[in-house]
Image (tube, rainbow, N blue to C red; front, side, top):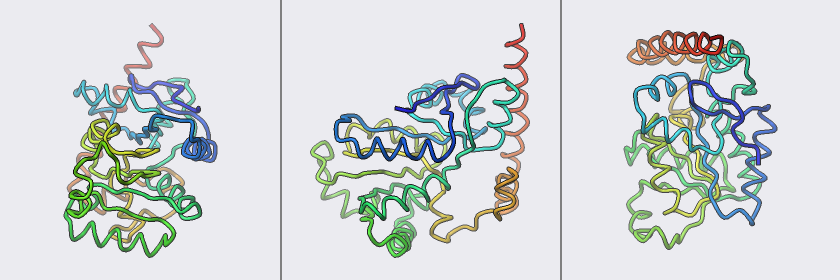
Length: 250
């Protein structure tokens, strides 16, 4: 199994190209001999900054089976540190590729906490995704009907190929670790607001900005309240990487 192979600020990452990573995930999902679930996180620089001040969060990230670098800052940091973490693989790109494959294979996909857990919005999001990927059975885990029919989760009435956790940094990773043994699923993925892009609730950055690594700037411009947080992560993360580089040289 293709697992984490390099470390930045004590957080392990998986190397390789996007196609290789995707194929490994699909191979795992299709392997009936696998008894455990595959845990996938998509850390960006802000995750690593948070992990330095949150030991519990750091420990959770360290337990991910596959941590994909979601952010050009991580790729640049790897070059500075002289390590290989492969291509950037954003949560939005990963989800789009997985759902395309899932539509071919007629998967059952669970979604939790989409649209901040606002039920009527999450229901609408699931409806849009269902129309876009008609061969997938989408299950909204926030829906009261699901919660009632699956109140005894260890029995696992519904078996999922993938569950997409959308709570955002820290909350989604914690939720996955708390529920991975309670809900039957082959793969768990923390994806933040990635489904907003696929469903049209939010507009993703133009392709050229994604290619040159400026998607973070687009998001900041779209949501000015987050811009200060993004810049803080950029500078703090950069300083932490420089310190780690200097420690390597000592």
